[in-house]
Length: 491
Image (cartoon, rainbow, N blue to C red):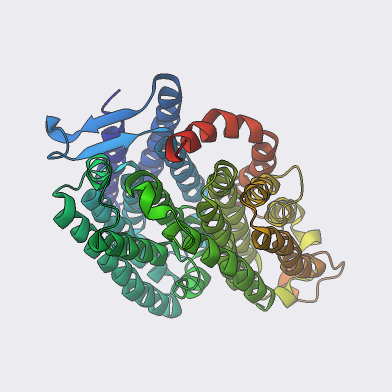
């Protein structure tokens, strides 16, 4: 089982290559290969989580070369949790119809499936990398796939992809420069070895500069406020399934890397004090919650509203990282899963609405609940979870974040989390006020019908998921997240 991390990557890379070869010949064959690759990776991720929780961390030394010289892949409780989230959302998104989900017609669809598989492989590589430079390589793999996938949305999406390319490259440069400083200081790139060598030299200006650069670079990749400027355009104009992947899992990989490096690699001495990297991440996250929620309220375009909502939801993850206590980190990691499920559901709902009506603007949604009741019911479940209505998944994220804020004595965070519930309710009430209007005002809505099962099934699974995850919250926290927080946080 020590080869499991490498097997996860191999399945996705090999199927990406096969899909790229057969795609120009027959798109259905490429789709079947992509589905097999994503499904195989998901099955391996499930097996990996079970093995890790039962037998402990899996470490694979590539080529038999031990660290710090060799490259190491690590599947511990946190990494196995993230692999399950990434592969699960990737599989569900691929099942959603290609024409509506990826806005792809046959000539443009040729590279689609290899790109999705490369995106998933890059994300898994970031999660399992035990080496700082190897992590950088996988950051670039998923970024390159992302730029191309965003561009499938048309001319405005191409501009958004170019804008993201600029900011993504800047984030990568800053991260790599920080890693270079650490290498000059320690002579190593292996995370465990670097952490051991940094003990006792945390007061070095070079080390402080290295972690500052790494944090800023990853915050750009994560779209943490105020470094979020590329995200609204990219998520608004990308095809719905691409936006679902970006919001649900792509930005979470950088958040994972931030957690891993700050809490596993950075020396504890560097994180003590009034102003630290973790506290800065927390305060910027709190500001992002307010900014993203207010901007979401001001939007008329449904996908753009969801994009700004993502800025706010990423703020919750940043706030939990900033708390750096057991309950706060639990809330942040739980929100990685919860937001992945509820936001991907909402973006796929947006894709279904576009496929049936061609409408994006919220004021034109009148009567949709009557024409597409099952789709709108799934959307209502996801929205309720975003607001934090018990017993849905989103309630428990906010519960743990509130608990962590109270434990830390940070009453400003308590107020912001509570206010966010009202702000989130504000922009979703506006949507459902239109949706629940009895008579359609638009001919396109009046002629709409419930989408076909291939549209409805992924949305229904995700809508039901927010309830199932909420009800199973204690099992997830006690079985998966408690071992994670125990390993990451100092005693």
